[in-house]
Length: 75
Image 1 (cartoon, one colour):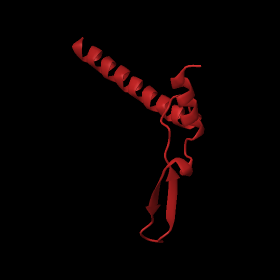
Image 2 (cartoon, one colour; image 1 turned 135 degrees about the vertical axis):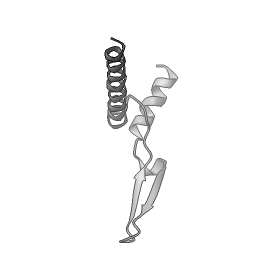
Image 3 (cartoon, one colour; image 1 turned 30 degrees about the vertical axis):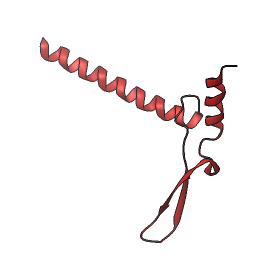
Protein backbone atom coordinates (compact mmCIF):
# COMPACT_ATOMS: atom_id res chain seq x y z
CA UNK A 1 0.00 0.00 0.00
CA UNK A 2 1.21 3.53 -0.69
CA UNK A 3 2.88 5.32 2.18
CA UNK A 4 0.68 8.43 1.97
CA UNK A 5 -2.48 6.29 2.21
CA UNK A 6 -1.24 4.65 5.40
CA UNK A 7 -0.29 8.09 6.76
CA UNK A 8 -3.76 9.50 5.99
CA UNK A 9 -5.56 6.56 7.59
CA UNK A 10 -3.40 6.80 10.72
CA UNK A 11 -4.10 10.53 10.99
CA UNK A 12 -7.84 9.93 10.65
CA UNK A 13 -7.77 7.25 13.33
CA UNK A 14 -5.96 9.63 15.71
CA UNK A 15 -8.25 12.59 14.95
CA UNK A 16 -9.26 14.30 18.17
CA UNK A 17 -7.06 12.03 20.30
CA UNK A 18 -5.73 14.14 23.18
CA UNK A 19 -2.70 11.87 23.48
CA UNK A 20 -1.55 13.16 20.07
CA UNK A 21 -1.98 16.82 21.00
CA UNK A 22 -4.62 19.13 22.37
CA UNK A 23 -5.49 22.69 23.23
CA UNK A 24 -6.85 23.74 26.59
CA UNK A 25 -9.42 26.52 27.05
CA UNK A 26 -10.43 28.05 30.37
CA UNK A 27 -13.79 29.72 30.92
CA UNK A 28 -13.25 33.13 32.50
CA UNK A 29 -16.66 33.08 34.21
CA UNK A 30 -16.69 29.61 35.81
CA UNK A 31 -12.94 28.77 35.68
CA UNK A 32 -13.75 25.40 34.11
CA UNK A 33 -11.14 24.01 31.71
CA UNK A 34 -11.99 22.41 28.39
CA UNK A 35 -9.63 20.17 26.44
CA UNK A 36 -10.02 19.72 22.66
CA UNK A 37 -7.88 17.27 20.70
CA UNK A 38 -6.30 18.41 17.45
CA UNK A 39 -8.07 17.30 14.28
CA UNK A 40 -6.46 15.59 11.29
CA UNK A 41 -8.00 17.87 8.60
CA UNK A 42 -8.08 15.10 6.00
CA UNK A 43 -10.84 14.35 3.49
CA UNK A 44 -10.74 10.69 4.55
CA UNK A 45 -11.86 11.38 8.15
CA UNK A 46 -15.63 11.25 8.72
CA UNK A 47 -15.62 14.39 10.88
CA UNK A 48 -13.00 16.51 9.08
CA UNK A 49 -14.09 15.33 5.63
CA UNK A 50 -17.63 16.47 6.33
CA UNK A 51 -16.38 19.95 7.21
CA UNK A 52 -14.27 19.97 4.03
CA UNK A 53 -17.37 19.06 1.97
CA UNK A 54 -19.54 21.73 3.61
CA UNK A 55 -16.94 24.45 3.04
CA UNK A 56 -16.43 23.30 -0.55
CA UNK A 57 -20.16 23.30 -1.32
CA UNK A 58 -20.56 26.78 0.22
CA UNK A 59 -17.72 28.01 -1.97
CA UNK A 60 -19.35 26.52 -5.08
CA UNK A 61 -22.72 28.09 -4.25
CA UNK A 62 -21.08 31.49 -3.79
CA UNK A 63 -19.20 31.10 -7.09
CA UNK A 64 -22.42 30.20 -8.91
CA UNK A 65 -24.32 33.13 -7.38
CA UNK A 66 -21.57 35.57 -8.34
CA UNK A 67 -21.49 34.21 -11.90
CA UNK A 68 -25.30 34.42 -12.12
CA UNK A 69 -25.36 38.02 -10.89
CA UNK A 70 -22.62 39.03 -13.33
CA UNK A 71 -24.50 37.39 -16.20
CA UNK A 72 -27.74 39.18 -15.24
CA UNK A 73 -25.97 42.55 -14.99
CA UNK A 74 -24.30 42.17 -18.36
CA UNK A 75 -27.59 41.70 -20.25
